Length: 190
Image 1 (tube, one colour):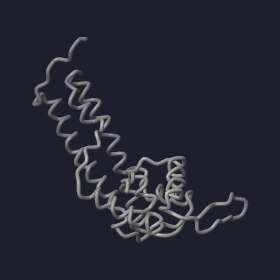
Image 2 (cartoon, rainbow, N blue to C red; image 1 turned 90 degrees about the vertical axis):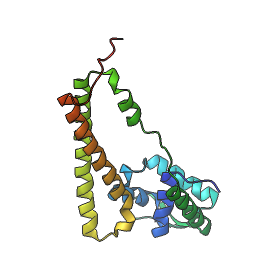
Image 3 (cartoon, rainbow, N blue to C red; image 1 turned 180 degrees about the vertical axis):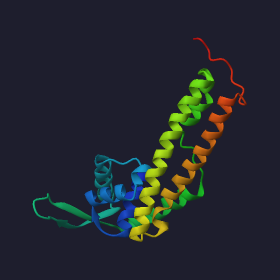
């Protein structure tokens, strides 16, 4: 049994909640701000649904048509899909995987730029993180007002915690760069 991608887990998890069509899955992911933690587009989601149907992880259960809208196929998760979902989630929870984000590379090589420029760039990153935190906090308020249990959005809380930690680190590092407390080599001229 192959491991599912994060998008695959999200698709099967939505269908474990209830039967739905792909467009509804996509809208629900956006509503829950899952697009902030899972790389998703309508095309990638539809391809995942097609693949899961072919692999027997989900099955067609109905075709709906509302008004002038196109027909939409409603899917349900199969027993094989539930088992695949459970085993993948268990594996993801039990082990740490280095996902190779680009920021550690950039900050590790930042000494190639002047300290003032690095402080300015990190300030821009900090501003974008604060903006994203504002968005997440607003989304969490809306989700709480709807009564969705926190267990369904632990990923959003986790992401928020990581962003707060990064913002704190950025504030400290920017302060240390600007005060000169963080010794900085002169940037290479090449």
